[in-house]
Length: 223
Image (cartoon, rainbow, N blue to C red; front, side, top):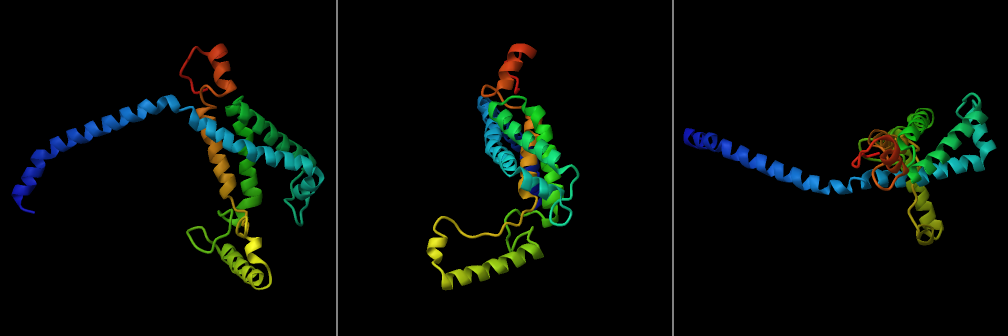
């Protein structure tokens, strides 16, 4: 590149900078115009998490004794102390959490025990299995465990294809191996962390209307 070209580029640099600044300003204005829809993000996060915690909590209550035995058993369970009390506390937190998230009531507050629950579950149950929730034989997070699981899955599929009605068996979905890693627990933790910081959102939450009426006169509050 000769000196003339370099000189020309240097001379036009302020023009490029000005155009880039204008484009950035225009993009910012366009994004700001969508701000009236900002309540959708926390609303969708809440609605996504509601069935997850509702099913988790009600399932624990439905099989309370079996869950408590798994919590407390040192050989084939988690070996946790006071297993019956822990199951009651965890299940209650999950059920109430689902209700609070659905209503948008006390979302920042209920996010704390739910995050603690997810963190404990990730550490005590899922961490030893790695990241992946569903086993895969390739990719950044594949391990010897998941690779071995896929090898066994392939053999099982071959047996079913040879001796069974494989099309009927897989008509409503393919077979997978649950690796039970920290992927889901971590994802839920991050979603709850977001809700803790941004709140339940405007309009479609009890928090918003309570805050608007009793706490501060702030029409644009996220809470």
